[in-house]
Length: 395
Image (cartoon, rainbow, N blue to C red; front, side, top):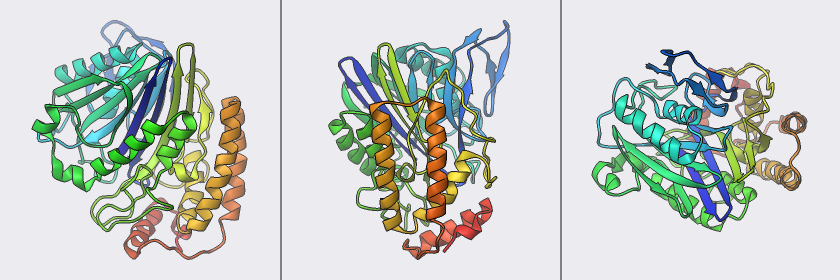
């Protein structure tokens, strides 16, 4: 499950997204340069092969480690896209372009938000969407909706099978795992699965925050929102009642595994990414499409001791057991980000400072503490820690 928000103002667009996936499904930042391709070339996406474009734009992607496509991304022209799973009455194809494939293809092939909507719509009609999208349960599939933005504006794009609808955004707009555009929403929504995902509840929450947002810091706070002082766990879907999602339910489980905020203005584009899970325990760091960074080995689904994503997991999974520790960590995160937002450092410098911050806090959080989450949530996380080789983090 996911949440995406955009705020369109005169001369500026703000964008934010949480990517919610399986807890051990590491997500990495992937820089891809502009490329020229020979006539007749083909492209292998996650599950299907399609004709390649003659030229593809430079992109920065936040993508699950095993996918070709991406959950969030930007290109060299200032186009930014976030996608959402949506559940519909249309049949789910066993093969096709995943929603994440469509997102990456649009970034690689379109120089404006409007052109990106057209790219997705054309591929949806000509190739179709489909194929497994889950990590733990590879057969899990869904349809997709998108917020597509550039410095000049933004669009909502929603799909059901090969059907689609789009609308230009005016002011603040959010999407959260449920169709909203009529008549598509009325005709195609699977309301039971949307309810299990708390889609409409989360969208009400994000919409209020987006309407009040004035800057990137406000959108970072939106993505960190627990709808309370700390995550509230439900037996049905864990802590999925608010944008900062934490797994630990008996039926539905999803964890925020990456977060992104963008400030888009003509001639001035600034992106902020966590490159780690759980924005409530993560620093948003400045990143740029044209400035690749060496962030260690690419993570997978087991602790490797070296990649940024898994080094952060050692802190994240300890801190969430103790709300007091989480509040202390977030206060120090806010202090660092406030300084960075006033005068953004070079990406390499920010990541170096963030590494030192992470190392310090991992040591501070190492002491044993009582896990205050419900018993079913503790049981769920003990099993994910075991699978990831992180069993020692359990209380």
